[in-house]
Image 1: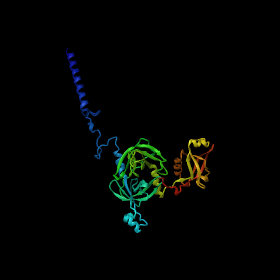
Image 2: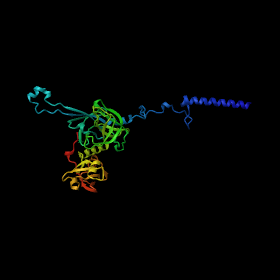
Image 3: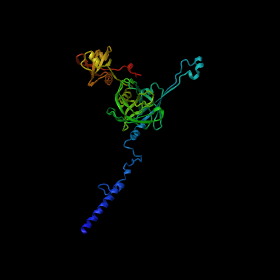
Image 4: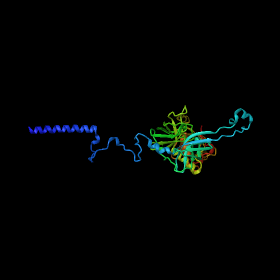
Length: 388
């Protein structure tokens, strides 16, 4: 009988202990010891401890760290074109009808953004932001202002390099634009509508956009991060705050963002900047041909055994292509070891070649496949303009 009573007391004690344990685990989990220490665990609300600097904890889904890293290096640009004296300003009849102010043209001011990319004070921006400007004023995020001078510009990519002489300049790190993928998160930073520095977020919507008529050489990153007038020349950064593009243009019917913006990849911008700083201008390869995309219909009509490539419709007399033996009707399928499928790819591949270097051009001539060796020329200055 005593054995039975002992068992009954034991089972009741275990039941009560399990009940107490359940209540503690459910309502006061911080009272439970951490495994292997025998010490109470941390309070759940304190699990995300503040940073050593005392700053508030950053949510894992936010991009404030990327914004803090990149925004100090993004500047606002005010480009001013001085008033030009009207050659007829002294005509009393002109002054009578239009007054003293109407007889002379007014100064024009344009707004844009730029990105500081070197401690020496070099900035990247768009050529259309500063084109024709007599004075360029740059304002940093920390409130400092300085006059900027133009080191060089490249209308064919719509890029320009400026320089400011200030100490302790913040810079943004170059990212890896070729590794971007559609769907990657990006931030656009600039000064839209002159309201002040603004950060917008979106994703990479598409890559390699071209034939938009924005510039001669196009290989744009498309993003839905809001880009508005004044953002031109500003930074497109990845989720780590590294520069991956220079914001350039928007597709808009209203003048505001419709979710389709374009940025020049940073690898192209960096090449242009280094060439301008080193040589004062950008040099590109040129072969002197009139190209046209080869469509399946054209290929079938002239009996070609391929459906992609670039059809040469004209060859400049005594140009690099002519001297190398390229002929109208040839279809270029390869530049060096790089395949080309359309006119944009052909122009980019040729432009990347150094003038006076030699290159082998893969050509389809009727039923024959052959290689043509050319000595690359330099793209003439007369061709260096931006389509509008």
